[in-house]
Image (cartoon, helix red, strand yellow):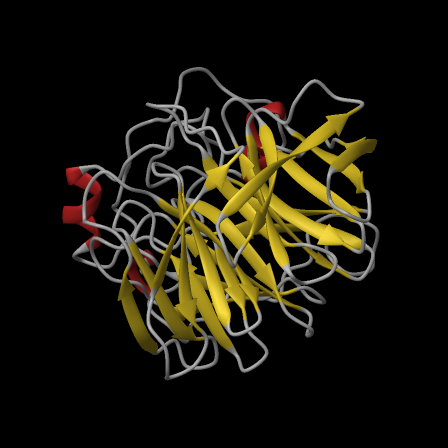
Length: 344
């Protein structure tokens, strides 16, 4: 969910057709980012031939930590993670940019299992788990939203939200009877019905919304504390907006205590505290929202030496769980990836 997100290369799409970890994407940048994820080394295998086939369990493994629930989760090499979601139970679901596969992590033990094997030419970016066990998944450059059964990995529905080029369906939030999706390349939200009835709705963003060309705009999205609207972060130049989902009117949220939320990516909310993952800044900014969601006052920031371009976060108990996308490192089949947990 990062600004200037690398597009899936032709090489990756061809490799994904074999459903193996021979996929690769162009590097998202140059140099080597700080962090500890590289310490897990390369060459780890996860099942026969390194494939993402469903049914394989990759644990339990308890990375070094406090001796309780694990605080680090090594992911399959070349996984290309970006989104994470957690429901009421202690399981995190993480999508793959490589071929749309979805991995489940047991937060208590660290055990990993691929629950959806993905398909060539697809990607799983932002995702949210519904109460009924369905995952709503943003399809990135493919312009789709998928609904996947988290228990069986079955694709229940695929919705075409945009034309197949020129768009990037990035993140989603569940609100009322609708799953709302952001498009980083256009000033619009898309509403997908939660259930068998209803039609996809395109909601143009108006009011204070500023659409900047040639960069990622709308990115992470969460519901407001009163459940009547949504908060959207625009990664460039780094602004927060309160959006009325009835009209599409966006009101800029005044940020206090920080210049902006540049590189804002995934959002998480606990009560009136809004957590903004600033990916290439390697930090999470915690803001206190006022009752009307007109101002966001910086309360504190969270940093960790294990952060390596974290993109999204999900909360369980008193922890935030984040995936490291490592966009400043080579995005190759043997590139190591992980997820980490930090205290709130």
